[in-house]
Amino acid sequence: MTAFDVSERRIWDGRAGSYARTFARLCAHTVPALLDAASTAAGTRLLDVGCGSGSVTVAAAGRGALVRAVDAEPGMVAATRRAAPGVDVRIGALPQLPYQDGEFDAVVANFVLNHVGRPLDALVELRRVTRPGGRIAVTIWQVPGSPGQALIGRAAQAAGLVRPDWLAGVDEEHDFPRTPDGLGALLSAAGLGDVRSERVDWDHRAHAEDWWAGPAAGVAAIGQLVHSRGPEGVAAAKREYDLLCGEFEGEDGLLVLPHAAVLAHGAA
Ligand SMILES: C[S@@+](CC[C@H](N)C(=O)[O-])C[C@H]1O[C@@H](n2cnc3c(N)ncnc32)[C@H](O)[C@@H]1O
Image (cartoon, rainbow, N blue to C red):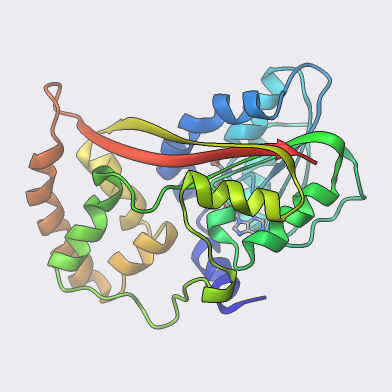
């Protein structure tokens, strides 16, 4: 495991419930396009990697796919089992999955490659468990992102919070441009064919207090940043957040938060 993987394990440890109530709603936006890209239909043997609290698994099962799922965090595995009773959900961490070569017609990973320390090795593993000609579809956050993605980070910065020392970044040798070209090139480097990659933009709408609830519960790296100086730091960041929210308020009082992701897919 890289230092980044070690900090990711720590970030997600025990966060399944808070994730399900907060950021899972945001990540759900790309699920229909992701499943389309993986040609998901009734009878497709599909693996949902990094299943989180189960959004992709539930949607794929709703299409009649024969879904299995895997996640590195035991709490997420339990959450997906609750959301999709009867689905085989296992604990497993990229870049090594507990499946045989070519077991699946399609493999998807929604906002997971941005949480692994060796993304190319992870893609090679997704390809290994996909049958030749089967489809692999993944999403990541676009970098630079859209303004809605930066809101909480700006609040933390204005409150003087700094990234905790233990929160590692991806090693330079394993990193890649978080753009359609960058992710598409990574899929090609992993041996996928017929690679397509596109940017996906949308406005996420949320009550200001709901949007704050994720980081306030310590979810994701941004949640760790918000908690880096204890309760006093959280309160300071919240004050800054309340001031910045005005920039994003829509007519109905909800925040309108522009987000940008990259969706890439290819054939094993
Ligand atoms: C942002 S969440 C996305 C969850 C889900 N795919 C969704 O769309 O809601 C990232 C998920 O990836 C999982 N994860 C992080 N690193 C992983 C790894 N190396 N192998 C498998 N899962 C991992 C986390 O535990 C978490 O559930």
